[in-house]
Amino acid sequence: MADWSPSAYLRYTDERSRPFTELVARVPGTPATIVDLGCGPGHLTAVLRARWPEARVTGIDASPAMIERARAADPDTEYALADLSTDDHTADLVVSNAALQWVPEHRDLLPALADRAAQVFAFQVPGNHDAPSHVLLREVAAREPYADAVGPVERRATADPAEYVEILARPGWAVDAWETTYTHLLHGPDPVLRWISATGAQPTLQALEAKDPALRARFEEEFGAALREAYPERAYGTPLAFRRVFVVAARA
Ligand SMILES: C[S@@+](CC[C@H](N)C(=O)[O-])C[C@H]1O[C@@H](n2cnc3c(N)ncnc32)[C@H](O)[C@@H]1O
Image 1: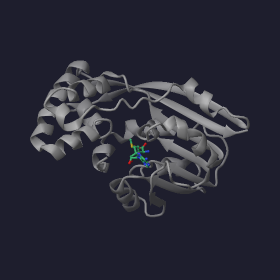
Image 2: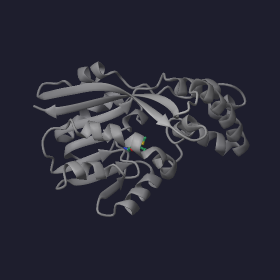
Image 3: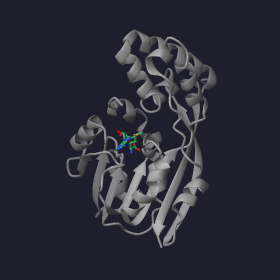
Image 4: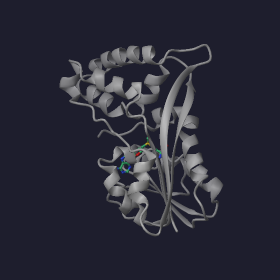
């Protein structure tokens, strides 16, 4: 996959940070060491520091651009360029926000990730794979001339809370899982297109760009029009319903 754009991703920092704050609020204990898997541009380390000022935090990410941005913004934290599925860092708290959905077959990986935590394994993943934004992305990308350039767009489905409990509620573990649907109020032109361009639609847009920048522009126009219809702008902003799933697995 092509690299991420930290500045595009950071455009909706408040909306993207809130679930992490709410996840971390449910983590029990006082970890001395924390590993953040798929840490992104490092802005969420501040949330960890606010909760556990004494903890030693390590951020792991597979994107060179994200790691570079994190190191520049937060030189006092250790950031490592690595794939979270093969990385072997251990810590009291292993945490991950909005990253595991990018790992193929992430469900199979969860017990091994939990085993890397001496105290708690906590993560949040989006549960919006069948929201209009994602359905439309797959539909428009399946049309020609885009389909020829990008192939089928993967439906990156995450599980429901109960399924994560089923996977992680092994002897010696207590699992707390829940979901929240946020109503984000976005502003400015084509806000849903801008939102999804920095995350879910990013691989598709980059594949089109690599083929032909004009093709990407044409796709953005067509996809943007479909999104405007699905997410109408109101006087107070454009509401975007966004479902997220949270899991906190703690050693009993
Ligand atoms: C949506 S961003 C989330 C960033 C940050 N955790 C946050 O919540 O703002 C997803 C991040 O996961 C990273 N990522 C995706 N697959 C990964 C993998 N296999 N190993 C490590 N990082 C990965 C991406 O590079 C990206 O920075």
